[in-house]
Amino acid sequence: MKHDPDVVRIFDTTLRDGEQSPGASMNVEEKVLVARQLERLGVDVIEAGFAASSPGDFEAVARVAATVTRPVVLSLARTKENDMVQAIRAVEKARNPGIHVFIATSDLHLERKLMMTRQEVIDAACWAVEYCRKYLDYVEFSAEDASRSDPDYLVQVFGEVIRCGATVVNVPDTTGYAVPEEFGALFRYLIANTPGSDRVVWSAHCHNDLGMAVANSLAAVRNGARQVECTVNGIGERAGNTSLEEVVMAIHTRSDFFKLRTNIVTEQIYPASRLLSQVTGLVVPVNKPIVGDNAFAHEAGIHQDGVLKDKLTYEIMRPESIGLPSNKLVLGKHSGRHAFAERLKQLGVDLYNVDMNKAFAKFKELADRKKFVYDEDILAIVTEEAVRGPDYLELLELEVRASTHGVPSAQVRLRVDGAVKQGAAEGDGMVDACFKAIAELVGVQPRLERYAVKAITGGTDAMGEVSCLISLDGVTATGQGAHTDIVHASALAYVNALNKIQSRRTRYRQISGEEP
Ligand code: KIV
Ligand code: ZN
Image 1 (cartoon, rainbow, N blue to C red):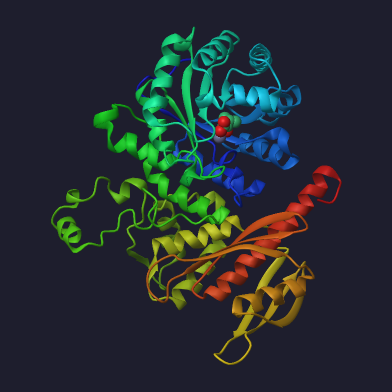
Image 2 (image 1 turned 135 degrees about the vertical axis):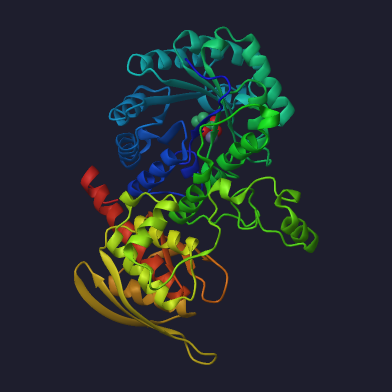
């Protein structure tokens, strides 16, 4: 496979391994939205899901495959015929289709999980790779639990799959067990000893259980890996996967050391991080490298003094290089639609995804209420608009009451499937009262699994962004809402989640003919 040896390819698995994070599930529309942003970000490969795992996953892979054009789009598959058939069908419409097949190689997995001998695993892997190569030019093979496998056995497995036509071979640290020196040495050994190793791209796939996923991925790169598998914000199974933004900015910022580059448009990193956080409701910790709120904040006087004199004293990266809005006042209540659209374009927003009438109306409403409107407020408006499901429910009016002695209560007016309904409820706090009133009007009793509020910008008039995760009869959905009033933002988030549950049920019925 032809590949520039100075480029480290970025294989994004936010929509597959990332989605395996507890509470990070995304619906098809959300996955398409994230995939569009991944394309703008410049990732080389998008792992869009595990097509055989559910009709919803199949549909998501197929929709992503039909939407993006530059990156390779692929689905994960076990070395089982049905998995491969589904994965190959799901990427039929992709401009650059691929597949990712895997089987475990550690003795522990062979003996306890697969009940297979080493030879049987080699046979299954070769059969699967040969099968896929009949349909696709891009076939990646992964040796699950490679970091705990016998290196000489890995040499044998990889040698055989390369002979059978694999174009990318991936070495996963499935359990996050590796340490950098050891993982780097494993790559050195495998690349030096595997027959045909120069014909494939070597890839690293790390998990963060011991907090070393990025360090392990970079050690692999130093020892010959030219693809890193990672996720936006490092989301993923358990403690997460290698964080895309950290690995990319390490290679970028320390190009003097790595002497390598990626195809990533770094200015799209922050918009990608924000979008994913808003879609999944998984809040980025303030001290997260690169994209955390404090990543570019200087608190100590001595640091502030240095930065004022010369930013380079304490800053190794420019905030603009990751697309961080400068927090400056951009628009006010007299700004017109044209200025608003121009600003969105400058912020890297794809206007194709935005309902301009609704977004502009919201901006005007916000500008009337709020003294300063920042770039982040504008981004929150459009992202919230984009992740909103079809409006089966619409919040028309909300009134809440609370005092130090009375019981908090809420009155809501909702449009439910076209009919206007009004109701009230008391609760354990205003948000609780508001959620109860909405649930009673809709006639459902969802469970609130997670609830988070974040102030988007500073000040008491800041926009509050609420995300919640609810479940109803086994279906879960996240909802997002942004408003200067956090109770109002909470109601919007709750309604958004209920809308998604409704559309998920409808989709499920359409696909399977059954109730979820
Ligand atoms: O962590 C892992 O081993 C995986 C494989 C399927 C590549 O996600
Ligand atoms: Zn993984």
